[in-house]
Amino acid sequence: MIQIEPLLKNVQKAARYTGGELNSVMKKPEEVNIRFAFCFPDVYEIGMSHLGMKILYHLMNEREDTWVERVFAPWEDMEREMRQAHIPLFALESREPIAKFDFVGFTLQYEMSYSNIINMLDLAGIPLRSSERTEDMPFVCAGGPCAFNPEPLADFIDFYLLGEGEEIWPEVLDVFATWKESGAGREQFLIEISHIKGIYVPAFYDVIWNEEGQFVGLRPNRTDAAAVVQKRIIQNLDQAYYPDRMIVPYMEIVHDRIMLEVFRGCIRGCRFCQAGMIYRPVREKDSTTLCNFAEKLIETTGYDEISLASLSTSDYTQLPELMEGLLTFSEKEHVSLSLPSLRIDNFSLDLMEKVQKVRKSGLTFAPEAGTQRLRDVINKGITEEDLMRGAKLAFE
Image (cartoon, rainbow, N blue to C red; front, side, top):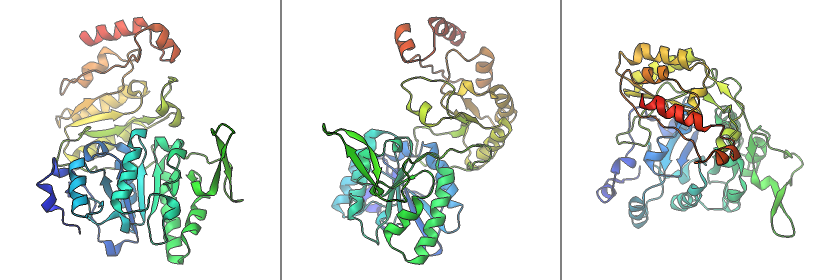
């Protein structure tokens, strides 16, 4: 275990680096076969607010043979201390260097974090380019919304996961466990997982450029590599994994509350929206399923606020039933309800009154553009009348 205590007196927000929070998963390294460093390439309070990390962290840690630990980008003060003390990037749970792990996985949420990924690999002492990594080094992988355009980071990533990870990761870990026992080479593992739907191995493809030096496409350089890599989609969200506990930080984070995912995808077609395209098709969770998870999460975390997570919460078809179900126990427990991502053309006064039974909260609407012409161009589907009606209801 790396001793970081002498460094903490010289940095802001030391709780970013200490770990040990409620519901974090601790295991003995000698009792697991697979070590996974789940890296969010931003600071702790942003990464800990990400629902995808919460889901995959607990999903993979339910395997007895696997220990998933969290890694965040240190703020510049902590990075300076680490480099001066020659301390490599470490995981929060064990405080061991992630260069010793089997997997170093990044979630690609926004392009501005790409330089952080390169910096984190350098801080960990892992060669930046996949072609430079040797047999005893971890596999560097990536997923998330930006993985749908994998080429900007293709030289640095051993393999990508395209689509929803709840189904892909168990399959990848099963293959890894068998491969590790066999003693085969690094490339053999990549060959085996490349046959899993949703896995893209950049080394198995050649980039095609035109005469102007522009990217045209990819060509497989192996006969067994798929011509087209298809994303993975979970068909039934009610049957998909969702954690009944979440880590409770010692410090305030950006979204410091229970997050309840009500559906994925979006019925709208706004032309600027990346998420609305890549998370298609729309799949809803049943309101009863959601209420059961909410009750468990209140019990295991102690949070006093539930936020409904989706791309457009007011489009959830079972919203009235869900609100009635949540209020049956949230009022009693003094837990407030938050509904972000509301459409200004699709909410009611009745809904607002229910939301504010425990605690008054704000309303956020996004018209996206100041003129009707621009709203029509981006296919926002909101009229001037919708804006005036929504503002009137809000003031009332």
